[in-house]
Image (cartoon, rainbow, N blue to C red; front, top):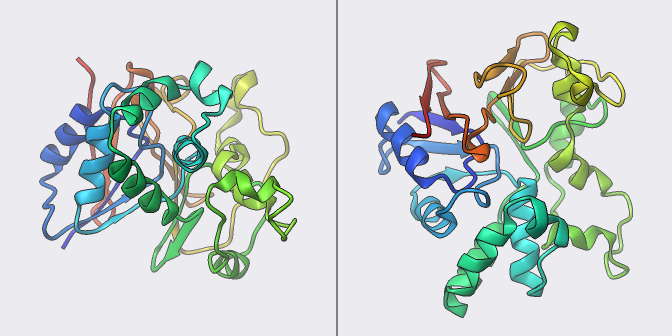
Length: 257
């Protein structure tokens, strides 16, 4: 059994199949982790989602685009910020063509996505950590169930008001920006506040922030921050999709034509 982890796919199904083929991924034996953002922007959201759902051992975390899709499947109302400028219109159109049964299957599947994973030698989160957590604190937070959809944390019906960290981990960029050398920073990449590295022997995997602009479409790695950032810009249609063999450290990339 091998362990792989893939960056933000964004419905680029052809790139996903390409990078899995390059790596020799075995659907019957291997584990595939994901840093989130499975849908939107690309033209094959249905094929991407149902393929991943069919895998024997697929272990995702919730990305902001996954959260938007889950909200739509729960409420029938797409978030304007999702459909107007973040590719959700493509996914919405595809969802409307599905049967009610298949939409419900997707909704229940998305409901199982955690905010982050912490297991063995890995910590996986879509965005990052907006505060300086200890590993012990993260272990405790990983036991907290999230609402479905995620936006319910702001509803009056949701009793616990201390779960803003859930949305922040999906959206945060400060952990990555704090790890980025100042020589590579542009105004957009400046952190709101500097965050110190988490003290851990685990490797932290994130997505959410394309490395296409500041790292040439290569994964960004910081040993100081124990960080591997895997969103290499596939969602834009210009960058590659990246897959990593966790145990060997080897990267595989599939590029748009």
